[in-house]
Image 1 (cartoon, one colour):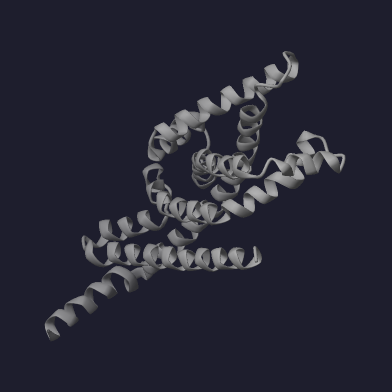
Image 2: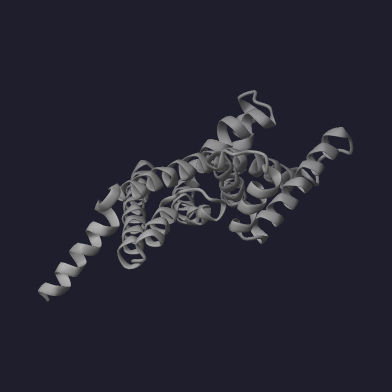
Amino acid sequence: MADWFAGLRADFIMNFVTKDRWKYITSGLANTLKITLVATLIGIALGVVIAIIRSTWDTNKETLRPGVGRFLLGLGNAICQVYLTIIRGTPVVVQLMITYYIIFASSKNGLLIAMLAFGINSGAYVAEIIRGGIMSTDSGQFEAGRSLGFNYVQTMWYIVVPQALKSVLPALANEFIVLLKETSVAGYVAIRDLTKAGDIIRGVTYSPFLPLLAVALIYLILVMFFTWLVGKLERRLRNSDH
């Protein structure tokens, strides 16, 4: 047993202490959190716009009169459906590599490209979450908005969307947790995220156990922490409804 602990201590020193290799982990963690946070914001902004377009079309397509407005809304809905089909039907790692190696091949800012790629991917899932919240909102809210003198866009923006966001907030928080784990593939485009940091240490020391275990534990702690926050958020929302 003493020999095992001595060997483990030696491995720990070699993997994390020697040449300050622990800095790979901290910088990788920082990049992972940056990508996740910015991608979440991009995904929510994109998702809200797409959800409004799709829910507006679904709700009003039978009553809209032929004209430019109907054509533009129908075109926007069709573009959104193509976007959702492509993004939800292809792996995120493939989307990341297409964005990095093809669309922005001339750019050297891999971190920004990863934020954009993961944000576009997240937007497709956020859009469906928010659309479900909008469609589940009582139709009387639209009538209330009209009675206050709002037009359709104002009613949607000031009354319906805020209520929809409140009802789907736990689902959006869970999307953040999923996105956090999905960013582990950022290393495919040479971005030093948390997973890539562990792999760099493993490649230098030829000792896979501790670096990969450390990466797994950090992800687990992050997920448990954010899951706890989501639970508190859900309880607070339930209490605010009473």
